[in-house]
Length: 199
Ligand SMILES: [Zn+2]
Image (cartoon, rainbow, N blue to C red; front, side):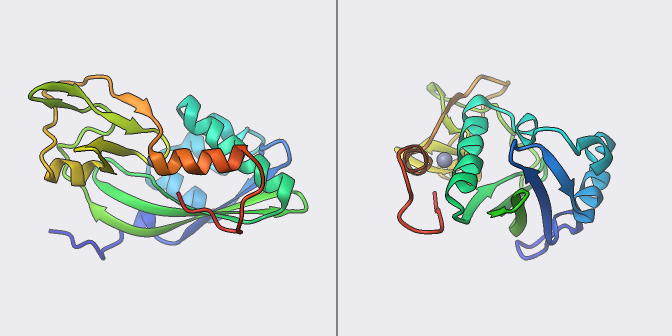
């Protein structure tokens, strides 16, 4: 059994993405290419993604809108943002942090792996539902937490707290959790009080 402290070699370190003012990818570093290669995603290596808008790599309208606002806010204010987020692989949960800072050419985004833990293979990535009674579970499209027993928590914790996965893929109610909603409000309603943002 893998321990929480074991980091998959594919998740180690940081990757850096440089964007221009129009949010097109100016460059990605060697660590990005290594990671794309380890996933067999040749179409995501630097020679294919350079010049493409970063937003085309973000799925989900709400999430894309959130990141677009965040990037524009950093460009407009020059303030640096530190944003914890989750980016799971099918077999492991990954807690990441994005550091987004303004540079003369646009933005520099450094994504660092903070913590990785194994994830039961039986957890579907996006489609889940409680079977008794049949309930569609609200799912935060920004931080990927679910609302269970009146609390927002990550999917693994919700399963430990009694959420039963459905026998087949069912649509989830994609929404935004309270803390992400607060963050989004702050981003869309003017300057933030401090330099770092914690959803
Ligand atoms: Zn959230």
